[in-house]
Image (cartoon, rainbow, N blue to C red):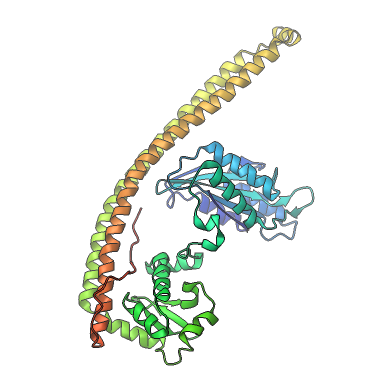
Length: 424
């Protein structure tokens, strides 16, 4: 289970984010502990109001818990993991909120604690929390028998296609997946030994090396968007310059964009737009299926919750009726029968809660299995689109070679896909 935590403020924004049903197919507030308010926004506002009496600017600690994609993780394991982390980080007994999300057929959880100690009116320190979360994560993979990601088993083997929040936000604006950008540029870097071979390898994939205004070496994609080369390579500028030199004779960004504009012929642009159009049309059809499935699943969950709530209220009335009042109740207390009936009621209440949780979990499992079938369709469509656009990108590289009077490289190349913003 991948665990990511951060200290933060802006409780109102966090509450809005956690309750978004447009970005998540299912959202359920599972627990609110230690708050007066009965909703997420009110709970986080309480924490921020208390924090004003302290110097804390980040009164909240937010944690996401992401199990493996195909793992069927019960609620109890999420709860046990949250309790374990709470003890490991020294947040025992602090007010907390737990929210479950489901998106693209995957279920994950968020837990948010208040860092404010009500007795000392100070923020709980969280030293080395990333290392401690990593330790808990490794233990979970071993205990549950899940396949451990390389980056968790050994940080030195971190996946080079991991990307930062800034890179992801940029990719959403540009319609370019940073995982493919990084893997392609790093692949070109690995097979090149100087600037000339690196530049040639990049252009075979429709990417362009240029001299940035302030960032030194940059890479431009087919849209003309600029990406810092050291950042994409996960290397320091000094190491990049050691292989490529100072790059003073490289074209600037403006000249490179002119080159890209002349290279992207109207015919190729038309082919790209046609591929995008077909992709959008097909993905929209799947998106309609997803929307209808989400509506039916939400209705089923709401109906089950209403049914279970009604059962709970009815059983609560029945349990209350078993406890006699008045003189009879006093006699039962004296004889010890009252305590016996009360213990039986509590045991029955626990059994009911466990049975109802099993019913909820069974429904969620069935719905996730149905959603997984639809998700496979999304993935198949995205892969097919990637293959089509990969061929188009190779055409860009061949056209560039022809425009310079060079023989096109018809060998097998690895490319970079773009515009795969599939509505899942």
